[in-house]
Every structure is written in structure tokens, then in C-alpha cells.
Amino acid sequence: MTMLPSARGLGLTRVGSADAPRVAALLARAFHDDPFMCYAIPDAHQRRHLLPWLIGLNVRDGCGYGEVYTTPGGEGAAVWLSPGRARRTPWRMLRAGMLAAPLRVHWSILRRLAAVEAQAQALHDRFAPEPHWYLTQLGVEPAQQRQGIASRLLAPMLSYLDAQALPGYLETENEANVAFYERRGFRVVAVDASLPAGLHIWAMRRAAGGAPGHR
Image 1: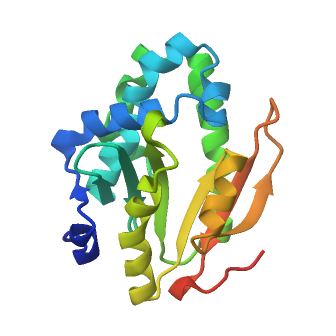
Image 2: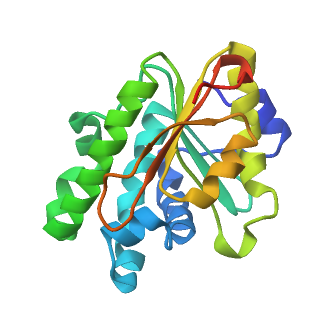
């Protein structure tokens, strides 16, 4: 897929694999205090050290099987997986670098990450079975949040989804994000509260054409 015309018009940059480390570092800073990341890696120093590498797996997967956009100044980034490629397979994660995980990440962290990912995947399979675009990550530098950057990053893909009559899907573990996505046409389709430490997963779907989704 070539870069969306609307993304060019908003001054966004399509990210390739060579830029994945830079984008991963940006998203690591954005997600440092995210509830999921704090649960998976409770120690803040470990989190600061490990997140760029862990998030880099997701960014590289997005570069290979979807679209990754950033602002020219690197203030924020969005990672999308394309229809038919929205399910990460073990082979894909190995290609992205997951084989090195046991050498870099303690087994207890990997266990917590895997538990949440399994719950999220079950929600994804249930509530987005049709071809769709999957927003796996959206983040903005902490010092530059609430300045419209996240909206600017989302706008091109949401316009494209409307034009192509395709649905969108995402999960968030941060309740503060729910209202932001609802204002952009996503609707909560499920809330998983079965995880430990009070962690929740909000599954959100945006219906084809931007019409309100079901609850």
C-alpha cells in the first residue's frame, strides 16, 4: 500500500523498517506509564530499558504488514495492521525479533505479557472477524500530549476507512483513552476485567463507513 494522499496532506511520514528503532523509542516514552506496561514490567528502570526493544517488535511488524506513520518532528506515531494481516502469527513475531526475547526479558515479564496478549487476541478474534484495519499502537511524546497530535495521526486512516467502507479495531488498557477514541467513531464492544492487578482491556470497534458500532 502506498502512502495515503491524506497523510501527505497532513504532513505525516510513512515509516520504514530502518526508522523502526527511532519510532519504538518514541512509543516507549509515550507508553512508559501505561497500565499494561506497568503491570507487565513493574520496575520503572526495567521498563525504561526494555520497552524500546519490546515495542520495536510491534513497530517492525507494522512496517511489514501494515502502515506506520509519524509526524515529521517525531512527536507521535501510529501503528496499523492491514486487512487480512491483523493477526500476529508466531512466525511473524520471530521475524520481528522475538527469538531473542528469552535472552533479554525475564520469564516473569514474558508470562505477564503473554497472558494479556492472549486475552486481547481472544477479544480481537471475537469482535473483529471480518477484514479490518487494526490500530495496534498510538502514542505521543509525554511533553507534547493534548496538543492534537494523536488526532492528526489518526485522521488519514479514518478518512481512508470511511472511503473504503472498512471497519477499524483497537484495544486499550487505559480507561482515559476510551473517550478519545469514542469521539472518533470507535465504540466499546467488550470490557475484559478478568486480568489481575485491576487491569482491564477495552475492545473498541469502528464500524465500516464511520457509522456507530454496536455495544
